[in-house]
Image (tube, rainbow, N blue to C red; front, side):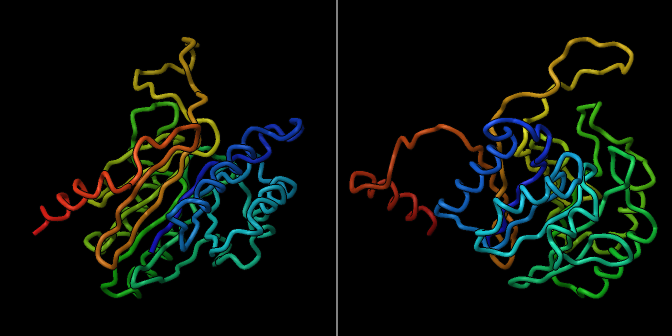
Amino acid sequence: MLIAQMTDIHIGFDPDARPEELNRTRFRATLSRVFSSPNVPDLLVLSGDLTDHGDRASFEKLDDLLHEIPCPILPLAGNHDTREGLLHAFPDCGRADGFVHYAIERDGLVILCLDTLEPGRHGGGFCAQRRDWLAARLAESGERPVAIFMHHPPVVSGIEWMDPAPDEPWIVNFAAGLAGHEHRIVGIHCGHLHRPLSTRFRGIPLSVTPSIAPLVALDLAEIHPDTADNRDLITTEPPSYALHRWDGRELVSHYETVGDWHVLASFGEHLKPMIREMFAERS
């Protein structure tokens, strides 16, 4: 099973752009790349900040680009979205107790899509109610493997202006919801940071998929909120997406940027000896 993940699309950042705003152009190009590639996904996860202001008009522009997608779509709320706008665009999306969170199972893998939106905050939120919902879903899934998708990464990246404090209450609640099930969670996959990241959370592999919208600059130097030091904050690096491959035992994540690059080698007759040799080494 292949799960594509796209995140931080931010439709509506420049709604009056002509002929089309940059973020929508970048999203269109990414969808085109993914769904014309050899790796057409079985599921598409949209892991938050689908819009820039959470308004219905932006969600409708997003929906215009998704109506021909040939696989189920799993949307999540980010801090720039609203739950009302998300549910307007995706009326069949799972919800419970006022939150847009839900669980599905495919090919023996339980997929949990979490809600880390806290209106009024840039950073994440995960209250006791969401903690208990997560714990209940993990308990009822028995010993089956689990993949978690959420917008906000509960880790410190070193890009200080984007980071939470390591002991924020929402992170403590999230960790408590996982307690006792860490051994069977095959991965936690996030957005929000606008950069690729690989680390661990409570021993669980955690990764961040880079954004569709322009990326955050990689600058790990200390930043002082009252000192404008003219550092780079946002870059024109190309849009990216993740492709998570589940083979029934392991979840392996691939990342690709979308842009003008060229194929330098194709599998023709001249490369058969090399490919055969590489296969022969397995035995």
